[in-house]
Structures are given as structure tokens and as C-alpha cells.
Image 1 (cartoon, helix red, strand yellow):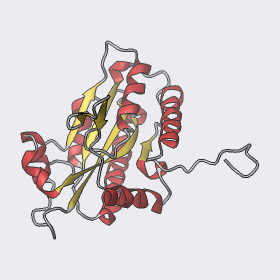
Image 2 (cartoon, rainbow, N blue to C red):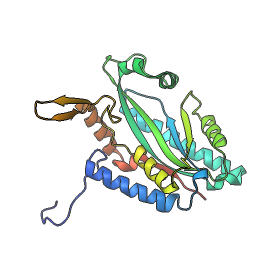
Image 3 (tube, rainbow, N blue to C red):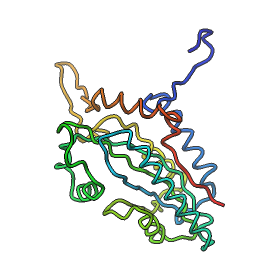
Length: 246
């Protein structure tokens, strides 16, 4: 609150719970009421694109930029020759996952194949180096384009590694608005812990009550991630990307 006590200033850091919840609600409303207003489940899908992992956060921005440019150019070029692509549009959010260098050996088969093909760091300066794994989640309105066509177009634009691109149809058992709401929430997960799915969280007993021990990221990684988030454009803005319809 400011000195007068009447105005609240938001820090706008994506790892702040208050700012995170406020922005997620805002993005959900925009997606349902504006970006995908009137869309039907059968024309909607959820896209995930993996990009190369790295031990250097400075390498993430160029990689994100190349991916966004490729997707925009893909849609722009297709629109020149095929009018069905005129209504294709998407809104996406970048998510950052972190691993310890040695975590690779515990990955499942598909993730291991994906990370190998994308250049998982084979030799780090120290075996405890943090490996950053950025990936893009996007809600896509396909218009008259089929899922197979869209996936093949994305893969042809430099994303052809195994399991690098995944596109899932909307759940037809749910209302389209509820699908969008769920996927915005999934894409904008509050991610600074290894146990966000509760897989590694532990219950402990202090003699009077149970408490949940969360597996938070290392303090240094949280600090480095926040500094990276806020260094350009600032926070939420650098995590969001979109292409509108014509």
C-alpha cells in the first residue's frame, strides 16, 4: 500500500501469489470473452512445443524468439496460399521447468528421447548444474485446418524432433469455456517447485499435526529465474505470445 493507504501497488512479478492469481484471472477472461469468443470445441486444440534445454538462462530468450517467429511465419505463409488458415489463431504462455543435470537418468522413455534429440547438456561444468527446460503451451483455434495439417506444418518449421510437438483436441464432454479456463490455468502454473504435481512432496509429523514439506527450487534458481523474468519487458509480458485471426 502507498503512504496514503488508499492505493495498492502490484509488483507484477509472476512468482508473487497475488499478482499471479490476478493475471491468470485476467488472461482467462480475455481468452474466453475475446480471443476465442464463439469458438466450438471441434475447432480447438491445445499445443505444446518443447525447445532445447540449456544451463544458461541467457540462451533462453533467443530460443523463445526463434520459436515464436517460426510459428508466426508458418501461419502467415500458409495464409498466402490457403484461405483456411486465415482464421487460425492462438494464445500461448511459456513455462520454465528446471532440472538438476543428473535428473536425465530418471526421465521416462519419451521425455528422455525428446531431451536427447534437443541437445540435453552432455557435459556440464559441475554435475549439479541447473538445466532450464523452456516449453510453450498454447490454445489454438484451428478454423478449417485439421490437427494433422497443423502439426505437420509446425514440425516442418524446425520442430521435427521426437515428441517435440504435441497437439490435443479439446475435451468434448466439457463446455468450450470450461476447457479454455482449465488450459489457461494449466499453462500458467505457479512453477517454482519440483513437486507441483505433489509427486515428491512429503508429509511430516511434529508430534501434534501433519505438515507438507514442499520440494522448492533452490534459492539461487528462484532468484536467477525472477531476475531473468523481470530483466526485459517484465514478468508476465515476456511469457505470453499470440497470433490473431485475419
